[in-house]
Amino acid sequence: MTPENKGTAQLTTAMVLSGTLGVFVVESGASPFDVVFFRVLFGALALGTYVVARGWLRGHGFTPRTLGLAALGGVFIVFNWVLLFQAYGNTSISVATVVYHTQPFHVVLLGALLFRERLTAAKVGWVAVAFAGLILVSGVTPGDFTGGGSYLLGVGQALLAALLYGLSTLVTKRVTGVRPHLVALVQVLVGIPLLLPFADFGAMRGEGAGWGWLVGLGFLHTGVMYVLMYAAYAKLPTSKIAVLAFVYPAVALLMDWAVYGHHIGVVQALGVPLIVTAGLKVTLARRPAAVSARRTAGHAPEAASRPATPAACEA
Image (cartoon, rainbow, N blue to C red; front, side):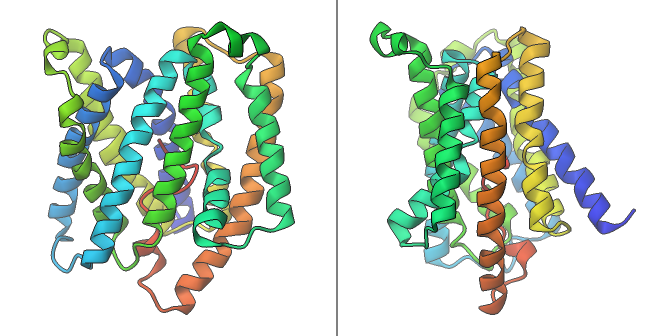
């Protein structure tokens, strides 16, 4: 098997795992804050064990600045998970996941707003196409604005989750010369004290089956999934990474239909290809320049410099 084929298999497996995330969250029966707390707790154990076993704590490459940036990215990523998991309950796994995949456009807009990154007319056009798709996928009607229902709240939560993910991506991509596994480990470690005040341990008593789902979220969807992703990134071109990223929402939609009988309607389905196409156009237009800049500046190899929160790749 060639390195690229191995990387394709690794990233596809990681994205399939990511697509089952919603089922694990719902089946755990825990509140979103409890789910995320135990995800970061078990995830830290999984990633920490892997990092120690590989001997990567020695010569980790962190400086006070990059460690602070990694921790800030962790704050954004942890609350992004809370909002996304809340959106599952207020809408559905399908709708929340597709709305959440407006992440690349938040990265583009935030980059232009906060860091004065160049915003071309083509990017503005693709962002507009994506948000047209978002309007279709969300299925929001005028009645949702006046009825005070939870559905509109869920769509907003998924959008805000995507915004926080975009902030995490922009912050984390400025952490160079550090293995992404270490950045991810810092981010989940930050989540433990951050969410501890919100965790309701009493609500978890007697949840025998629920604990299995929570352990799975930490070890499978945080430990195994991240290790597979970062191994794949070192072997794959940006174009293939961008395409394979959309295995995640495809599997999420399939799981939501197979397990819960939820599916998006015909009009909503029309918005999916708009978001997917626009996402690919924006991602492929943005990443090669960033990779070239890193190489020209003489930073650490790309495999060690990839962001720990690759846009539109995982939840």
